[in-house]
Image 1 (cartoon, one colour):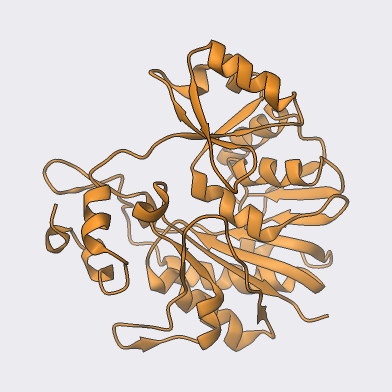
Image 2 (spheres, rainbow, N blue to C red):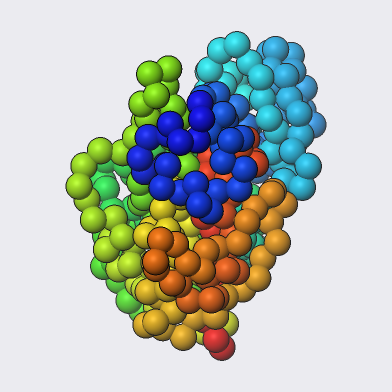
Length: 305
């Protein structure tokens, strides 16, 4: 597909997407599956042997510990390794917010929009299942998947709560807060044979307004000297840089430079007449065709201590 034939809104982003031709061509291909090994439940070497015996072909991802690209004729969720909690099937780029968060053993961590639990379980692994993680989600119906994944992956350091993110109870201050915000999901979009977007978000929800309320609340829950990571799986600057700028205008947040292990570009400083806080450039943009995974936006900020 030629870039100019892309449907809106993706066509609007060609001004800042590197190599638009490669991007447009990539959207016509299915996303490859990846899985994360879980050392909390079993020896990674033994897990790899179990997967290979089941016919799963694996290739480790350089620079992203525990992640492998997988090839398998059936659903990876049906494998014994998945059912036993030895692996978690997820997009490769969904690991980037947790790597940016960099949670340490013994810390107090909040995952404000946690369901279905991929990032919570990843954080628990990096923390060696010590300290405490509060895994929150506002939708009661999503808590079943969250708690099931925590149990399946052998996570014992997490407590599950159900609050609206922007109404999370004040009082506790966290060493690190992850806000993987609800978004339009444009980084997941694929283009079908007829040129229409597949799995495009429907509805008229004012997502930027929701995200702005969430990011300020999330920052207020960070202790002095702590860290907030804001992430979305969309390309839309209104949901990314504009939200980050909203935080910079209202709170004394400082950007934390972060070098990810996957190819990425800087956050935007301008788009279609809009100018953003220069500090937005420290955020990282992951483009689908450069990482062969879902597009992501990740910003890491600190609360001065």
